[in-house]
Amino acid sequence: MSVPIEQARLALEMHFGYQDFRPGQLGVVKALLGGKDTLAVMPTGAGKSICYQVPGVVISGVALVISPLVSLMGDQVRSLREADVQAAFLNSTLSASEQARVMERALSGEVDLLYVAPERLDDQRFLEFASRACIPLIAVDEAHCVSQWGQDFRPSYLRIGQFIKQLPKRPAVAAFTATATERVRADIVRLLGLQNPYQIVTGFDRPNLHFSVERLEPSKKLARIMVHAKAHPDDSGVVYCNTRKNVEKVHEALVQAGVRAVRYHAGLSNQERTQNQRAWINDDASVVVATNAFGMGIDKPNVRYVIHYNMPGSIEAYYQEAGRAGRDGLPSECMLYWSDGDLSTCRFFLEQDSGNESMTEEEASMARAARRRMLAAMEGYCLTCDCLRGYMLRYFGDQAVKAPAASENALGATSVVGSTAGSSVSASESTGSSGSPVFTCHNCLNCEGGFTPVDVTAEARAVMRCVKELRGRFGKGVVVDVLRGTNVEKLEQLGLTHAQCFNTVSMSQAQLKEVVELLAAGEYLEITEGQYPLVGYGPRFREAAMPEFRMNMKQVVRQPARQSGGNR
Ligand code: ADP
Image (cartoon, rainbow, N blue to C red):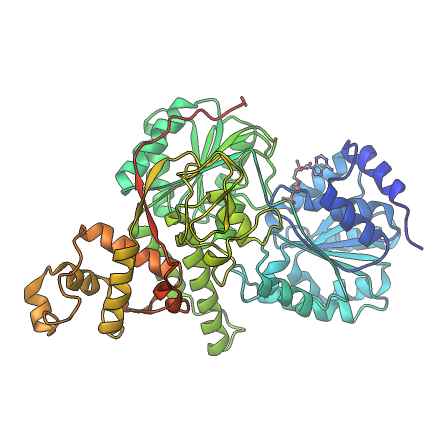
């Protein structure tokens, strides 16, 4: 008794005012109308909500939407009601009698879409309700939360699979996420118990977003942000920081400079957070300075720029946060400023994280290993000489971009090996020195030649030789000192002045350190955690010995003056 797609198109137009589904949406909607389980991997802004809202409206019964975003449920339901959709939510902001009323209405067929948080699946009254209600569809939003390989693991998501199993009639289950690594996808299918699901990975490219990455000292980062915000006083923007303290610092500086900025982080009262968020959404404030607590579920179309004051811990997090820019399709800027300190902070957070109560020590250590690889891919993005967009699209497994085989790492991310980006931007695909196609988007700082790629292949090989000779027993500083023949007194104490690679490289200390980092980001080397991180071989160390191995390093030559397009 599958519902015809025409009926869904009608509902799409009637309630949401859209002429047609986007290509990725159409496949998902058809699958769900036919009662098929689905796993849809789509980036933020691709239109995941429509994929379950429309089927929820046209299929009879109450569709459950399981979402971790309790604070936003009220807003989501309100806007659905404005679109004449019978939507409701159940969460702890409602009194017991209000909750009972919502369930009654759902049982008598007055609710098409019911939003709940995963914790609700533990509530006895809710379970009783679910056993009596007609539930043809369950949509699991942010489905990656079920996986320990993702960065937002929530143990409460593990209950969803069991909940579905105990329902009297199995509904179609649709899982949505913006996180696409193979392992997370496999976990979603397994842990939610999806049955032979229709799977789709789509729409990661956001051509209207311009990407740039620069390594800057914190004081310069702040100056850049001030210049940008002041030069675009009418543009709506977000500045993401890694700590509350940085939010306070950047926010204060912007306010003092006369920018209409508000702040947002978990340390503020609910009231201030809501007030600030509203001010920004209504364009009463132009910039919101926030931690990553901000933005989930917010759909503001006219965000002209997203600046990262710090390097996030993964490409997933970065692309999701940066992707809040330009949802209206107009040209928008995504700028990432990073410094060495950011990397240390990310590593610190990562190593401090002992998982959560439901994890065994082994699971927690696996989760940390996964996050270490995610961070390495993020660092690779910051250091790559390749097209920035191409780098991320490959990471997400988007079919639109072919990976240069020689430079693909375990994560599907490319390293800088064989890169010719920055020197050839005339075609969408130029040929890299490895003979593989290199994607160029013409709309990122790297493709625009914002730096000169410097060939550091010889130095990289020297670093690899040195790490071999020192047998992974020393940190980055010692490796660099040995190669440069500096800090001799200390090296004498360590007995390293007689090393074969002693004093064999002439390059500045900072640059040689960056070569070590590049090798680590490309997984040729591995920098261990702990108080004294050691440099050892990484999983791809053999490739660095191959004749086709090439490594380029960025040297920033100019800061392009760009205008972000469109108005408010
Ligand atoms: P996601 O949940 O994937 O982040 P949303 O569901 O919030 O994305 O949708 C992002 C934007 O795209 C919203 O402004 C939404 O109204 C719009 N949108 C979704 N589907 C369509 C469509 N078929 N046609 C036009 N706009 C759409």
